[in-house]
Length: 486
Image (cartoon, rainbow, N blue to C red; front, side):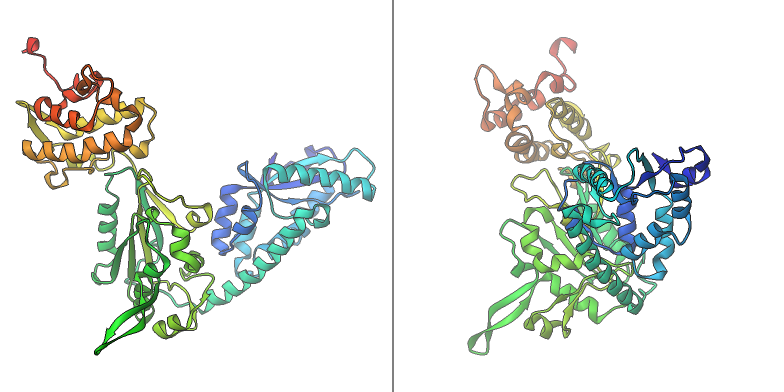
């Protein structure tokens, strides 16, 4: 497999025979290109089983021309493959350089043609090549699309996407620039995620204060839960008192509330904060609003949606789209029980900020307690528990982050009674019911005694009396001083 620049410089080294030429794009490069061009290929991606890190985007026609002559022709700026791919990916001349830069990063694979190049035999051989490609890669473009049934469907999709891309270019040209008070490079759709207690909400709030430095009231905060719905999030008709009677009026949800303010004040930033975004069924909660999450280069929605009559009246517009000054930031903790999974199409429309299990631990390195006449540091306890959980092959998103508890005592001494009460009600409960549920007897071996199974009440009772002796030897040996050692 060759890079385009290397192959261009080494044409003389090739066997000068007729050949098929397969052009590949690295998956990351292709996704980056689509983002730059605001092209949505999810309908194609979801139709195929993608297994490799490469996309096949072009297969050269069978030809009597030698491979060297064929490639010389294709490396020309006006070559068939370059113009064809450029026209399919974007009809805008403004994006030509973006496409050209991408094409120069392609990988090329050469398949010599050993049989006489007769149309039926060539069609069959090329068909086999396409079949093989479709089995393990996303196949975007083959000039002779009639060689494979699925290629016809892809061709149809690409034609539709090309038209949409043209509309997007027109919309982008009409878009206005952000006020200089709003950071143009700040991400619009972000999900802060990590294990419990890693500071997701804390860091989101810090970023919020920075974004809304001069507009501290320009935000709404909502927390998703299993019963949260589209009506709660976007809006619906509700009974409201009016004079001495009850009438029905459109009551906007937090999404429409922030949207309207952002539309009315285009030079101010507005932020919608969603806590625990994956604790609700996001596909149902967002509904058709999901389509608005695709942002163009100017940070407006790529694809507006039709507004219902009540929405039209509320925002005074016929179409709904997210403006460039509206931000949607969310937190997500995948360790929670009963969370709803997010599909790939939804996640692709967000940027993700990951918070590692020890991120920010300097803020708790001096958080300590005197337990059974011995000074113990909360961060040391946390890390030993995490090490034990990892030995049970428990996922990182179930571990204890630095800010899981005791946040009001950052780098301070924690009163013993407070430490014990919080430890029992939050840490032991979390470990017992969730993180170490299948390993209770192993983790709380010290509280088990002669019983076959350990109970939560027994663990709490022993913790009040013996502290960290409730844990297994690996943990308690780090903190317990034997009498004979004194």
